[in-house]
Image 1 (cartoon, rainbow over the protein chains, first blue to last red):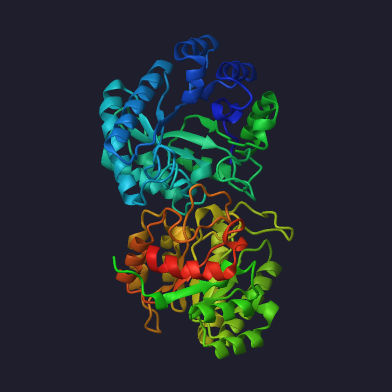
Image 2 (cartoon, each protein chain N blue to C red; image 1 turned 90 degrees about the horizontal axis):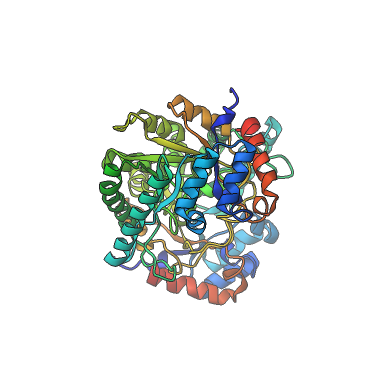
Length: 289
Length: 289
């Protein structure tokens, strides 16, 4: 396996979110020679949308995505309308920031306002997701902002995303047509026996912009043991995912975009010196991905 | 949906393993009118195999399965031979106890002796699983002990089982032929968009004994939030799984066997009075499953 092109390294800003503001992350990435990032909406809101756009321009950083839209299912029409409006704002922000796509974490079962599940109807939630993306496409497509569905690990099916496999994401894209693609995050899909063939399928599907469905590629690692369902992701090389193998499948499918490191790690990487985190991302991208 | 037949209720003995010995569990189930159980090997070893067989006979309890064989992948031939020998002993024990099947938790990536992963080759681990089951079938088939593959949730792919979907289990059964079926545990498969069709597929496949591939049906619930990857399963009704819907799919596929409650719950059900646990299993089976 040839090593990855180091210039493809991108930082999902969640990776150092506990240590730095977005302004500090942008400055840090510029300093470490990381040329692309994917920021989160709350971080952008904290620093200001226009200020962030200016800062990106001044440092010469580009975006590999924008995190995130989605969360479509809701127990009632008002909740779904609120999600629709919020997602349109996310599209607007992604346009201001020049993001190549808006990442969609589609949501799980409908929830009450306090977060408790409001339904056990998983098929119904999936239908709400399909309808929600279809409606958002009517807004995002003419605006020129591609959407990118991120299938999440099945352990998040109830509370974060009820799209849980590449096959499911590919079927949704087949149904929804142009303007929507897929984010492949190794953490979510590494276990899937159909991963290779579904990456190839996504690579074959072309949008009107000439690009394939493969809109982003997220890196981290699966630790053994994993001590928390959400906040115990590993740095590349510290876990069991065969990252070069999955990268080879992405490349064979024609993907030539960013390799975006996204690590939620309450007890390890979020507690370290962020300059050490960025240096380690660079090293492990080169040596273990 | 019609309520479930209460006589189908079975107890996987892990559900009260922290409170009671197997002898106490057998006595407790008899007292609560639960007529079938699935014991674990370590519990049987603690109480003695012959003593357990006698106790089952005396109380009139039957087994709905025997937990468990499997754990086929190993870093070397000696490790795989040790797994083979241990699995043959599990078959022997299942025969002594009159179990209708030996449940297989097939194992994840090969491990070192200290438990650390020895490989990232998931496809290789899956091949070891296939080969291991094939070899065990040469022993179990003539002995008349059906094997039953339990697909485990993808969050266990690295460390417990690299068979993670019903589709994968069905494909393995297709390949391995007679004498091996599937355990459907709602906790592991509830999220799967292909669940209904794969249950139907398993129901259509017949073995030489005239039965379908559907050899066991395990109940519990998925809690939101889930606080531990292994030991935070919920009682039926306390989580988000649509249990009557999945039961209806099992019944439509011709399944007429036990409904086995299996709950690992370090901070809740393992801390309660076991008589309360058994009474709750009966109630929730009737009302929520």
